[in-house]
Amino acid sequence: MPDEGPTTRTLLLAALIGLAFLGLAHTLRARFGLAPSVEAVQTWTENLGWRAPLAFVGLVTVRQLLFLPAALLLTAGGLVFGGGLGAALGGTGIVCSALVNFAVARRVGPAILPGTLGDRVRRLSSSGQLPLLIAIAVVTAHPVGPMVLGQWAGGTSTLSPWRFFTVIAPTSYFRAGTLAVFGASLPVWGSPASFVSTASLLLLIALPFAFPGVRRRLL
Image 1 (cartoon, rainbow, N blue to C red):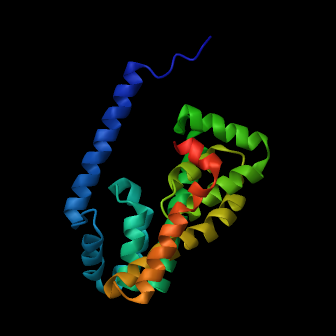
Image 2: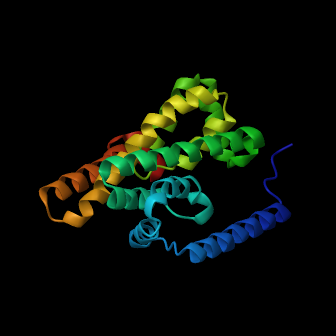
């Protein structure tokens, strides 16, 4: 029997859950003064004093519940803490978030992925774990790559938690480092260091488009 796709009831339930999450995110952001901007995150972090580093790791970890983009938070981390510490804190938050998403996906199963993505994960897994590991590494290391999809894909595959961790740990810190260094250069915008960090970030963002296969999938 052909797949009839999601029912109207399922779509309505998904829409209601999405609206509930949006409402919760808006309420929490308003409660803590966390507007989706680098300046707001900077102000929020600086007002916490000695608790700021741990709070920032927690914020990056739960950013999806607040609908705060990782790129924004990691850039703000570099602005507040500097390139080195910002990269360390941001990378730790990404790793923690990735492990949570992996565990949730492993618990819920393939139903958490859209149909086409689930089919792609199964095809990659059938070719061995290496193609899937490479895909997860690329989307995690890329400054604006879809990390969450990679983490869910890993959780619904046959990857062991340890192998997943060995891939996302270094790539998470790499991603956090590129954005934190960029954020740290913002106060000295116009300096040679800011031009180098900006050019490096733009190059990393554009790099996947150098591959014809990537361009075909996106276009």
